[in-house]
Image 1 (cartoon, rainbow, N blue to C red):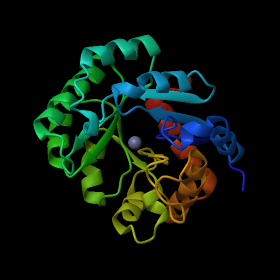
Image 2 (cartoon, rainbow, N blue to C red):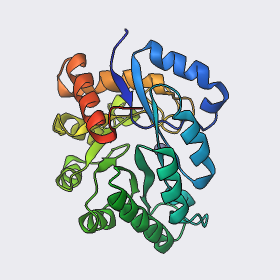
Image 3 (cartoon, helix red, strand yellow):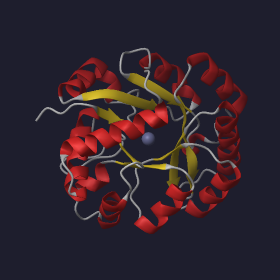
Image 4 (cartoon, rainbow, N blue to C red):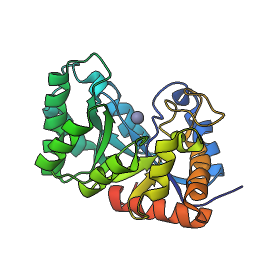
Length: 253
Ligand SMILES: [Zn+2]
């Protein structure tokens, strides 16, 4: 089925294996109706690659320091310069991840500085969060930024707290798996003006697509799952996701 107006708000086109066949990956995405893609960087090492991809039609980028690379020693001042120089659409992906070994204090400091930067530059943020929801919500109170929390897989109660903090919620591969009960329940209940869709390709898989093998074209399956869970028409779901994505990231790419 060919759809129109799909927006993959989170795909890492610079990562292998996607980077080995950018042309093919994009062609397959455009063929199923993808019109916009947002490529978030994860560390200073890939800012240039993301900015370069954003020169292609339909693609925007976000630049930031992901918590997994928070102890790389990259300075937030360098990020400020790159953001200005490239006209990136967002600061991302950034956040807190208490499941990894990078010291929490380092993650916290790097994240806090980037929130401050996003708020002074008036840019939206793309958030990554694992097991640090309390700390993240506290920081969002201190730095009221626009943005999205990506790859949502948690329950609707916690989701509501992020919506109250002014954020959008991004749904991806998890909602294609009926056993992901909390994610699907959140997808059913999220207000229609508060969600966007993503693949997080190639990192996150979908039902029938193992992690490492997903690509932006799979956003079509995510949209189908979202429509089915919400009991909406596919057109309605895609239109809402598009409008919300544009509100977040702007309509130029
Ligand atoms: Zn990601």
